[in-house]
Length: 467
Image (cartoon, rainbow, N blue to C red; front, side, top):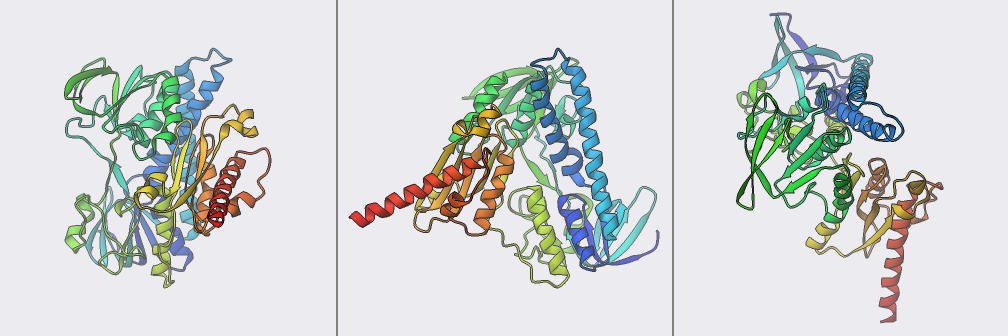
């Protein structure tokens, strides 16, 4: 066993939450070590957010390229995979650079908590103990595995699906959430025959039907088949592919494909050798760790962030919580006080949402006005041939404050930030409508939607005055 090290802050996991926590902790003067059992940058950088978005972007480029070129899809896909890996390498290298320049010590190995102030780090040929004043757990999550469809062979998780060396002739996706739709559309654009099985009434079940409709329209254009209210039962693999059995309307059906991709959610990495039970740190029935508004667990010197805590499993949520945890450890009065967390789906067209939806407002009996504007009349969208979709801004009808927004359309992933900022700052729809937006840009759709909401509020007030 190598020398016993002592640090102020031990961070377990180097994903978006872990490396952000480590860098912020070091910047605040804390002696910090980060432990990573896999690849620096975690799932997001290496087998999640970054590689998936690189391949999605490449599938769009291929779609444009093939309109005037006779390029072979398989050749283009090989180049796309090489490009994806170059992006991953740059991102991972960037994370390592940030950690290094901040003065963070990086150890590769698996961390096991021995007690509230000690961890054992198991490396390939050695073990070492680390004593810490504080620990930040940022161990992330992994794909959920179905008993009926154990991963292996031709049954893939998103990790294996992003690393295929060839374009599948056919692919059946179990789960029509954001990962299933993103990767399904990506492979469909490269020429795969894609079938999506979704247990709910529609794909992307977390979004309202009017937002999902343009995505479904494009999925049909891409030649995809969507089977909703269906449950996968079993799969039989052979040398050429697999036969997937599923149930719909109490009837048995089968679909044949080269591969099956399981995308039914993710499970927090709080089990195994981490040692939570050993130190008396409980988890919920879903394996999550409960924390307070400062990301502190029931053990005062141990913090938890990201996918292993409650709320949406999003990289940007983990990064936000990472800064809070590090600042609390350094003695600052930080708390988790965000008003809104944006959610993005990199489908075609893109989907983005923040705050309350129209359905949620109705369920809570919140008086609202809805401002809506289409990309179809926007000059920039017309120039880009990207006129599908709209912006919906939801405001309290009494105060005019923005309490939610949804976008389906080009660059929704970028445009949602303006609406998130509006919510964080307590802005009104009048503030948005009166903000000068450059012309011609997609952002003008937000301005127009807000303007429509302002007119509705004014009309309501005038009607009340008349009465």
